[in-house]
Every structure is written in C-alpha cells, then in structure tokens.
Length: 283
Ligand code: SF4
View (cartoon, helix red, strand yellow):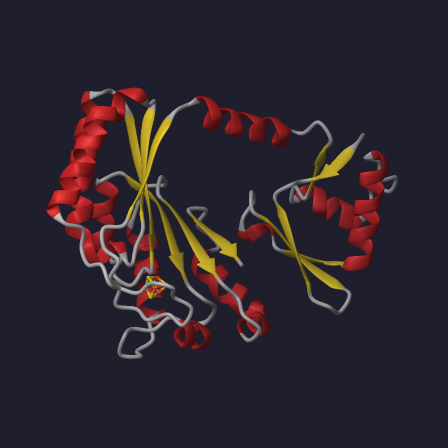
C-alpha cells in the first residue's frame, strides 16, 4: 500500500533530535514527539515511492493512527478539492466588519491606533442596504466580527446581525457568523446573545500561560487578562449544552513562552482537552 504525509501537519524542531508534531485536522489529541531522524527517514521513503517497508514500526503506526500519514489515495485530497470547489463556484457574501476600532487592551504587538470609535448609525444603515440589495446574487452570507475589540460594541453587532438574519431569511439564504475577540468580555451571557445571532465560531487569543500572556496582553491600566479570559471559556464550556459552536484558542509563542510549551499543553489539555468544540492554533 502507498502512503503520503498529510498536508495539514506542522512540525516544531526542538533542536535536540526531537520534533513535535501537530495535525490541525485532528486537534490537540494529535500532539506527539517523534525522533527527527526517524521522521525524516519515513518522509524520504514516502516521498520516493509512497512505500515504507516496515509498517509494523511503532513510529510509523503512531503517525498513521493520528493521520499524519494517510493512504496515497486518501480522502484528504478529495475533501480539499470539494472545499476549494465550493469556494470557487459557490458565491458567498463574505463581510469582515469592525463594529469598533477601540479596545481596552494594550497588547505589546498591537498595530491599532484606536482612533475610530463605534461604527456610526449611518454606516450601519449603508451596510444593511448593501446586503438587502445584493443578497440575491449570493448563495449564502458569512460575517466575521473583528476589531479593535468587537465586543466593546455589542449593540452594533446586535443591530447588524438582526437585520442580516431577517434579510437572509426573506431571501432564503443561509447566514452564519464568526468572531475574533480578545475574550475578556465573552461571558456566558454575552456568548448566549451572540449564539442567538448565529455566531458559531469564536477565536480567542491566549498567549501562553498566565505570566507570559499577562506580559503581552494587558488592559490599558496594565492589569493582566489571563484569568478572566480562561474563566469565561471554562464557564461557557461547562454551561453550553449545544455541540455546534466551536472555539479556537490562538497562541502566539515567543522565545520565552515556548520554553513552557509542556506546561502550556498540560494546562490547556486539562481545561479543554476533553471537549472537541475547543481547538488550538499555535503560532
Ligand atoms: S486585543 Fe487586539 S485590538 Fe486589542 S490591543 Fe490587543 S491586539 Fe490590539
């Protein structure tokens, strides 16, 4: 049987002969360490002719089990083709909307100037009219709420969402939204309001463990934000019974925080590892 490596994997070289692997399709459960030399050998074999003679090899079996290695004619290719095909041929009205450019965080690496406040009524009405006049040209509509911190203008999200949902309903088009938020104001109550407005995907940035995160992502007054964000997510995880929403915890590692990767993985696996609604994007 011929095999190949999945296109959905990332590898981090520890520099001591070991690699850490992550399969974005499988999530946190896929994280493993493998000998770099063994990994390279298998990779070279598969790249040559798709064959690895010793399929009883433990590393090979582990890589196959976690779908780092897949059959050469595996569904991954087809699934990707279908996905790309959908994006090319199915016209989707995609809007990225910044309800406000303000934010009460002052992250070290932020590029925002916080000059523009909440979106005006005039601009909101113009967007609603645009959607009303153009929705018939599209198969469905997707909105991504972005900022600044979008939850600092929740009333704008609510006003626009209600209008979009009504317009899409009348035009028999599907509507769905996602949000990129710092997570500080994402209490269970706010989550419920967003969920009722068809916000299904939530991306929240947590830059490592408390010490490292709080050095990067703090309030304008300098107070850390880690505990509030983690508590919000744990509360949602515990109280939300629906399996539909999904949460991506995005982490930007730096030279310091990467040193505590093991602790980070342990901490977040303990909190969210048993819930497949929670995934990770490690940068
Ligand atoms: S949360 Fe986002 S918008 Fe706010 S300061 Fe941090 S990076 Fe900038």
